[in-house]
Length: 199
Image (cartoon, rainbow, N blue to C red; front, side, top):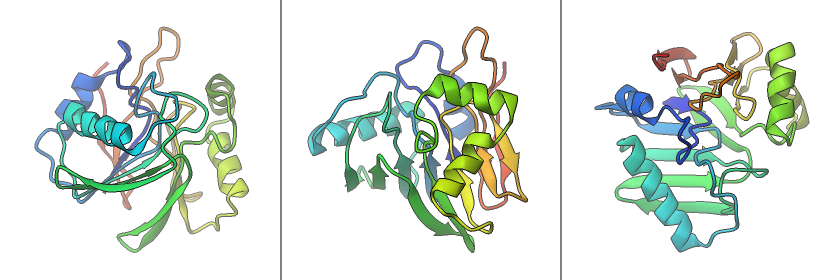
């Protein structure tokens, strides 16, 4: 299983080329994304439009996992899809604007964008820059997750990994002028980096 967050497809500042190289030729069972798949698609969409957007995501990333799991942002960037489940070009797609719980490799994980803890992304960024992982700890507490459950979140764009806390923020593939925090793709449940962008 590979996890990442904050791709921001459609932004000129997104390192899509780097991410595509990272995922090129990879055979993966599950690809999980912790929100901000897109840059400017935040609106309510119907099933047909959601299918087109997820098909676009798969095409842009040039990846065909057996399953795509996406916990979409509720506050910005991502489309509002409600609960979505469908087969798209041979890929089982599960998405919602909510936390998603799954078991993989003997570990329980909850994937959420992170806006469940702090709605504003800039404020989330500031909080996690000052005290790394705080937004994740708040989200884990708000969701009532026990210590042995992994929380995978994005939103703040600040990479964070703490195996003891079982909290991972893969960071962002969108690079800002002063916000040079960068993202990575992680393997789970090992929580080992799979690849990072070249900056």
